Amino acid sequence: MAYAYDPQNIFARILRGEIPNRTVMETAHTLAFADIHPQAPIHVLVIPKGPYVCADHFALAATDAEIVDFTRAIGRICADLGIQPGEGGQGFRTIANAGDAAAQEVPHYHVHILSGRPLGRMLQQPD
Ligand code: DGP
Image 1 (spheres, rainbow, N blue to C red):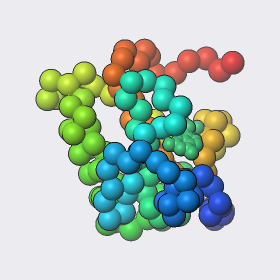
Image 2: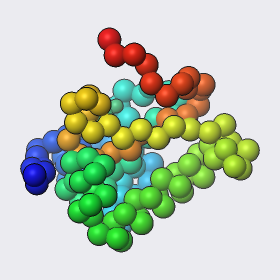
Image 3: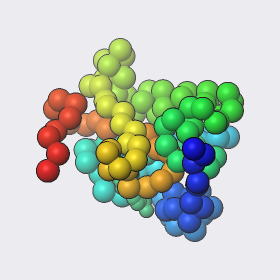
């Protein structure tokens, strides 16, 4: 089944400049900005500029250039924020929700980078 991308989703509107954002990094294929409802002192959203719905869509349909750019952007953001555990930083968590089971709210692929406090174990029980 092919994914249908909704060009009116909120991140598409951010990419078109219709909604402001607090940009953390912008590259050829990637935009990173602060989450509007931060769950931790550091909460950055990293999105590809291309029209991908979620992680598997991006992984299978994006170009190699987009995937490399996106992956490197995550690394550079973590380095810029000083949270790399291998460099003495406190560490971080990346999360990419996909679809209903993961309660994905915005249907444009995004990776959350969370840090700045102890984040606990990986999953909580659903409400
Ligand atoms: P998810 O559940 O993984 O789809 O998370 C979507 C995230 O997007 C959520 O943490 C809140 C954030 N978000 C929603 N609307 C906006 C917005 O207009 N601006 C910003 N910066 N973040 C938003």
